[in-house]
Amino acid sequence: MSTPTKQLALVLGAKLGPLQLKEIDVPKPAAKELLVRIEAAGLNPGDWKVWKLGILVEKYPVILGFDAAGVVVEVGSDVNDYAVGDRVMFQGWVDFATFDVHGTYQQYCRVIPECRAKIPANLSFEQAATIPSGLSAAALPLYSRGEGAPSAKLLGPWEEGGRGHYAGKPFFLLGGASSIGQYVIQLARLSGFSPIITSASLRNTELLKSLGATHVLDRKLSSEDLTKEALKIAGGPIDVVFDAISAPETLTAGFEATSPTGDFIIVSNRPIPGASEHPDKKVHFARGLFNAPFNAAASLSLLAKLPELLESGDIKVK
Ligand SMILES: NC(=O)c1ccc[n+]([C@@H]2O[C@H](COP(=O)([O-])OP(=O)(O)OC[C@H]3O[C@@H](n4cnc5c(N)ncnc54)[C@H](OP(=O)(O)O)[C@@H]3O)[C@@H](O)[C@H]2O)c1
Image 1 (cartoon, rainbow, N blue to C red):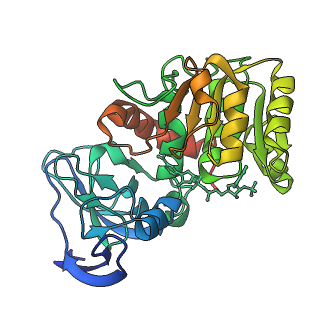
Image 2: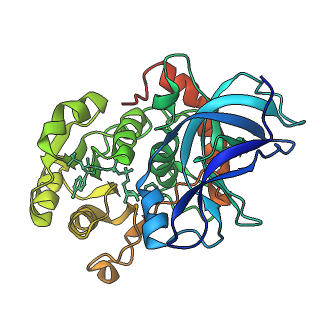
């Protein structure tokens, strides 16, 4: 089947404008890129935030969509690790030279090396399309070690010597049942952290324990009680705390539980009450774009290992 020259895309023509289905050109892949026919695209909270709040994107028109899975239909002249017909998952990306966004709500998309991974045989396109941005927002603020990366700069569990590297150290995660949270639990488990304490609706306890959480606290607890319970289970202040929700109540609980020089990762850039009184706590606002320059090295190394991690069940998807 030859690649068509025209395709349909969901286009946001202007900030806070309507989304419109439009016919646009099918792009050509550059030397290191793939052209992928999209079979499934994932939804993210970021999509409605750009559309309805007008944040994150400055250049319009724009095609939104952070996650997709599909089939390679063309490879650039310098690509030797992918072939036409390969099944691939990828994250929509921003060209940091032009600020053009290459989103996934279109039928065909150019895909750069930092954003793509092969889909193992045990996953459908629909499952694979849920993975990239949840995983990147979980992994990169923990493990990206590029200069200037907003990250705890831990050794990744997919890297040499990384598996079990943090054995016996406690980990606290607010929002274990979120898409990001489910990957954080699994990465913390692979890193060896223990106990892994999380907050969620208690109906999710069994699921979260199956992923590696050791203790699930009711998200309805007050901030004070969440902190108190987490510290009691951990046996003292916690060096690595991840707030996958970053609402006012979770930020308070997470920041309080973080040790005086510990790392506190947040996913929304909101002020944290009392933060100015503890300047040595390191707060990192997650930047989940695989191809952000400070994330590129970690992204390439994680995405190369991802098919194996998914196939072995080390990382599970819903
Ligand atoms: N900075 C970045 O790079 C980046 C990247 C991606 C996403 N984000 C942001 O990260 C946030 C999470 O995204 P997501 O896709 O992971 O979300 P999601 O999958 O839509 O999360 C929904 C879940 O959050 C849980 N939740 C809500 N409020 C909670 C609370 N107070 N305490 C504990 N759990 C709570 C609920 O779990 P229960 O069912 O257990 O109640 C709910 O099922 C969004 O704000 C998104 O915009 C940031």
